[in-house]
Image (cartoon, rainbow, N blue to C red; front, side):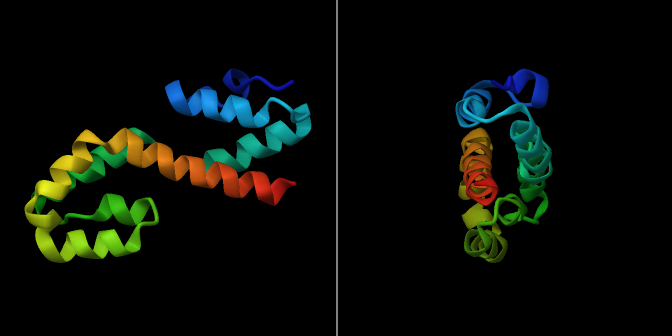
Length: 114
């Protein structure tokens, strides 16, 4: 049984529990392979927070492009982050946005490895 702390020490909290639940039934080699690929695909919540802050400088929506929400990214870009209200909401919810993206990446990777 693989330990998420050994494989991915950079993840924390809810994401850590989620990934531990995914890799609990994997052998060590498969868990290591999962961790290596997941590490390259995941987004760090701090990066999303910093990019969201850039939205106040007039380039709103970059965070949505980073989490593969292209339509929302274009909407934010054209409307100034929906008059900055959407950008403020994203500042509050940056961890949730990142966690949802990372969940999708983990599920895609899990189906890829099976």
